[in-house]
Image 1 (cartoon, helix red, strand yellow):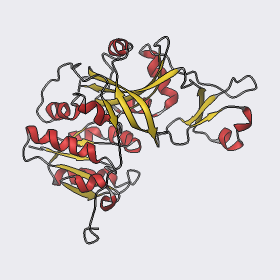
Image 2: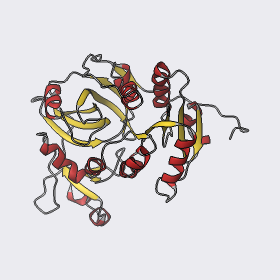
Image 3: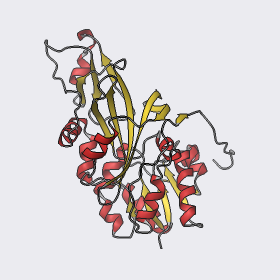
Image 4: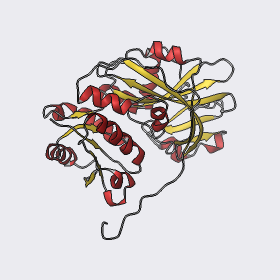
Length: 324
């Protein structure tokens, strides 16, 4: 039986590694959680994992071969991708791993492509009855401020607020990846990350909204679980999402007065703030293990703790020079 778990591009995701270790050992006491990274000796998560391995870049032609060979050698039954650049490639190759009894926990390739391209994500939200900020084409009639961001960006990389036309540089206009949207002011809206768990049939089993109180480098540093008024709307509209699988992390703006939702983006992976949802009772890693290792069905879950606050802080792992 393939009972071990492999977390790719582990980087700083030490807490995610620890959560999977905790949950795996409840069901498989001798199971191992492995990690891979370009530089495992410089990855805190790799030091926390039961063992870690170096692997080539996800853009390398040999990446999939290396990853598959490692899974076969280490009796890996579940692969957890963690960063956007690898999600699409692993989704495209999911069946190749499945032929060997290895479950790559990622949504279908078509859905991943739709989530990765923010221009297409607008259409996804529309199909499910959720409004989005309008995309804007630059002209003399544009109303400022605007948000400019790459259509395939992540972690707020290259995102900027444009307050007036003088900020529209030639570099910005000529960048083929840059898209512009209407700006939703923070004084009128709260921003939420919603961790949604879909079972292997694409049925929604749980969703936990997290208020983004403070972020750092695009990742939440202070957050709080919230039973917002729009929870029922989200549950109803996303009851089934074709091709969805395991954790999808969606961003929404909620109007402070009306409570109206605006969908911003969907990341088909665990987000950096997921440990807050986990500690509130939403045991997505445990459900993944039950579904994909034990073949169990997952029940709907809504008993997570409301108004639980997470205040993240920096910690460290010490590695001796001989180990490096």
